[in-house]
Length: 250
Image (cartoon, rainbow, N blue to C red; front, side):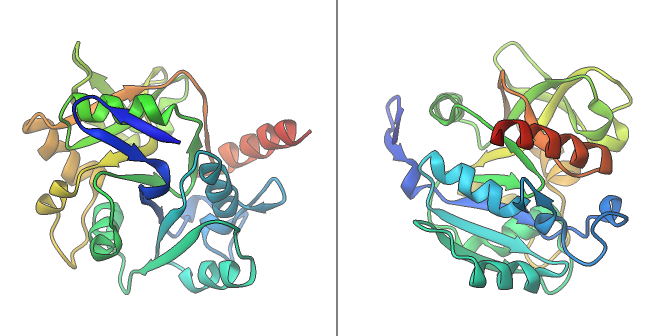
């Protein structure tokens, strides 16, 4: 599977790295999974991170960089014992919590492709990646967010766009304060140039610290999808994901 990029040649999924952020402590799920990282929460009979990789592999992606932190050794052990056919899994380990941006920066030397994908390890959306990549390059964006309409915006970062899809404001979940909005799906395309904005070996947030800079510099864009997305970040959403995947499995 290849992506035709106007004036840019081709990008192939098999050559595009996916960085998965799975280092968080998952404090909101502690009463459900107190002894393991959130990425290993069981959904559809397997850890969510395994489901995520298998689903992305169906789109042709083959190289995954897992940014681990809290109980990260359990994630490494799982994939050592449960190999995923046809994919390469690489680990970028945090010695101290670095936040979402710091985790990506920590993996900089492991990332080969430009641009590359970033996915939150507790979300998944079935996206038309051909259109997503075309949107990113045609707008000459440095960073693009996949977005969806949501009736439960309090749990996600809400976004406002201008007429050409450029992000003009981003409010993280604890600041959203509204029930209906355009929200982030937790899937991003990032150019390597963005590494210049992120400090090394320092806790740094994509959402709180990087996005405001890119909005100011007019390099952050939002691509709206028509599909729903899965999120297991809260007990309520975790239960919803279980039901959705069980229905798909059936």
